[in-house]
Image 1 (cartoon, rainbow over the protein chains, first blue to last red):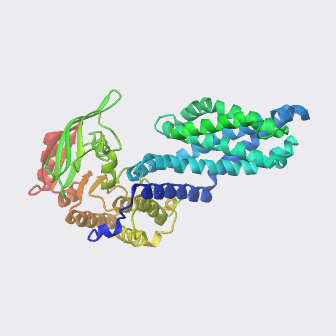
Image 2: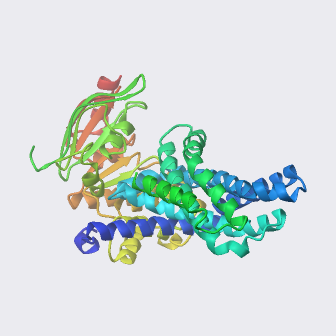
Image 3: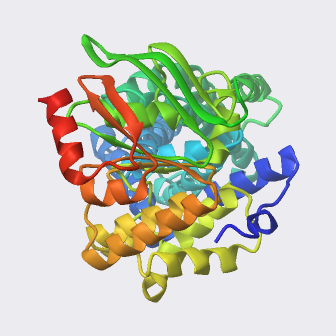
Length: 229
Length: 236
């Protein structure tokens, strides 16, 4: 069986094997999610429920709804992200698969990048599906400012995915993973969420990207710092 | 340390809180050797194998595999290892083929399709290659886990209770596989309670009790009765 084993083993450069591992991990996560739809379903249903509950709680005051809409959307995304991260972590611990992955990894950052990309995709799909519903319930035309909002959501989703994945990896090694993840993730994400809420709110109110540039810079710095970490 | 030495452990201790699982393990194994570790439940066999697999860090002592330090140079050791644990490390929502394809890509194997077909034939799962793993029986999952463990031509194979859940036919296939890998100079360490099969396969046998290797010797010339006497002498 091992007679010509060397012919089966690729002598790849560090960067090539790194890229191959990122792609293999990402493909595995997306394939599993495509079959089960567990992560997306739980995130989407939760996000919609948060929006619906807030909609009823706020009542019919159009002006108040407009003021709080961006906050509701980002809070819904934040908690949906926690759910998604927990489901993704559970998938790796079911048969201790993470240990098998660790035995094959050349560099642990391949795992981090693949998981971050997967989480970004899940959040992106949730945003695409949730935002039109928010527009209807909150009577806000998100489509009119879609270009500017895309940048805000891109920076926000990137930040949530980076810190979420980072803390999900840390929490995986603790006994109470489900409790540890929100305890670590939610406080750290506060600066990002504040900037995202204000940027989104002001864009909905008709302000330009230049007006919200401070918030966008803050989000960019946040993403960069945690990306490097 | 000689280049012929594959595994070298010196004074390895492992604590889990207030519990001491390993109490100073000294062990040396040459390349191409097959070692069977016996011992009662709770003797620390799994902990020892997890430390060898770089999945757990020793609390004290030295672990060297293929000349590399298992704590500081774990990333150099890992591609050399094939690990069969109590858990399968498989993804239930992927098929057998997809699981092996995933691990093959992670290890950077080429001619992956041929290699996957080869290992699936070895474990007799080729007919179920495109079936989701979660629909497999426990024994089939164990066979697939064996295929996963040998997929990337490991130099050191760590088998923790490899016969668990296997039927007679699968056990016989696993015996053949271990013999074949052994003949190809793969170093094998396995923990098992299956005395008969282990004595047939192994060059050396060890008895582990209460976190210590209390006996280690050649398997040659020891029959089942003789080993049982040894076992009761050391374990009680």
